[in-house]
Length: 241
Image 1 (cartoon, rainbow, N blue to C red):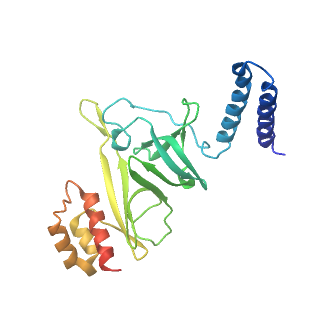
Image 2 (cartoon, rainbow, N blue to C red; image 1 turned 90 degrees about the horizontal axis):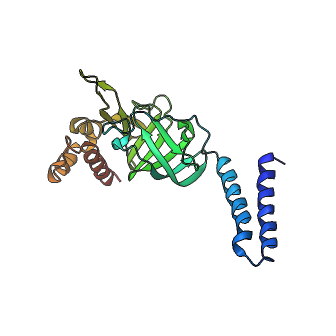
Image 3 (spheres, rainbow, N blue to C red; image 1 turned 30 degrees about the vertical axis):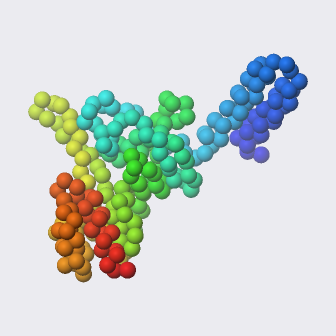
């Protein structure tokens, strides 16, 4: 029997034995303590074996600055749902480092930070966005394997690659401007579409209809580019059903 399984079984048996013995005692507070300790230790054992915390440790840097490396400049932990290594985990505290392109989870002890291994990461929710890891085979177009914000997934798909770079100012202050590269998956291939013109070029079979939709709905490709492209692609799919 695996040593970890033995440990879990022993902890459960200990909890049961302690509970049975405790029922014979008048003071419920005293006998409940060993039972709770055993159950808590068992839960920690299961968490450690869950397969979620198996990446390298993450060390925070420039966390307190307003302009930082994290998605939406948010360096605090956000509870998220993760599909990782074939299992689903809920209420996992995460931060997302766009500069290093690393998704970081907080261990149950609230002190250790682990980097999730990208190839084991299927998807995760973060700040009302749905991120996926896309393994892209050769010959699929302009997309590279990595983590993408999936804005829309239908017959056609819209993905955004969100990254940050380092910009050092003359006074030596460091800024981390974000760059978003938008991709459309059409007929099994990925095309970069970072403007209204490139969108219409990719979806040229319905260019006239899309132009009218964009104008009628006042879609703004400067201030709200990614959402405008997503809305246009959703409409495109209704035209090509």
